Image 1 (cartoon, one colour):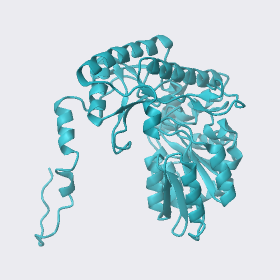
Image 2 (cartoon, one colour):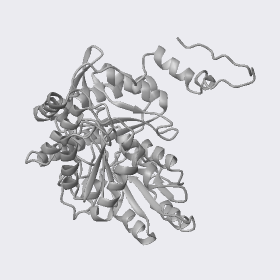
Image 3 (cartoon, rainbow, N blue to C red):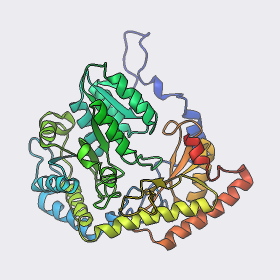
Image 4 (cartoon, helix red, strand yellow):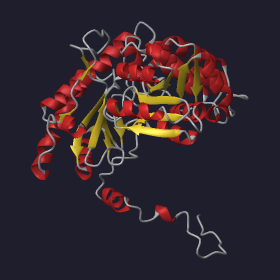
Length: 443
């Protein structure tokens, strides 16, 4: 039970005051009352293409399980073997008693997969970004970040106390201005971008970013959380897709998406990774991941690097294009396929374009987005909802995402639900944004 603290200073403000009557309290209460709150819904089955949520089967179009490996018997066996061998937990940090042979194997195989000298595994993906940026950067340095970057990147930048120069999402003219201005800041300069951005699903224009970084003498870090296990012939991410791996100084990735587990990693030169091992507080002072998570991630990586990997990469990207095209045909506002260049040969590239597994549907109004989400949910389809401030004002969207293990029949069932929901929704609430609106909103 929470009690009010004793105080000898009646004028002292209550630090808990901010939790009462905040700006979103009323709309949150209304959403709960109308049962249209799209968050904290309870999943009661494995994270498969069709799941059970709150008493009903629903097509899962809101997962980052891009390769569908959470249900793969080889991955589950990897988790079981680790559990049986090392128990339920390691009860200590990697520095002390929390390193097991699976960690060393995983780091070695990640470095080989990514084509780098070394790799370091963190307990979570959030800690991988925070622990790297908060260690590599310091007072006097400058960090330049895309406004669409992961929240964990911003957290790491703020922790570092380096000078932060954000630039508007994918506006390379703004990036160049930030690089020019950073020349007078006096310290080292690091540019940090997502390889695939988590809300829009678009890919950073890495070839030009690499050129700018090299021209202005800046280092480059790419967050491949949504690109690793998705893009490129090896599934090594956007850096591999564009052929710029050797020019990217650090790459980060997670296990909680394509690699069907939980955790994060950073790859780069041996000296930088070794410095993180002995200096990163997020690494040194966090308990090691449970063995089952490490075993599952290692098994998933081995599946991806096996002969089965290319087919999984092709399947998830084919499914993404099928869903995107189907939603556009129904009149929804979805992003266009992204042009990556006609000389790139990789899974999912068709006529020089690609569609990532993240397919956002622009709605615009926050309340309409919540109502549309609920209609889809009641119709048997689960998607994610992104509202301001996660997206710009007026930019509310439904974030759909696919897995390699979705089949066409299931995706077509989902599209049938989208069609019925759109018809009924527009009859009651007016038209939704149509094709082309996404690009206009982004501009």
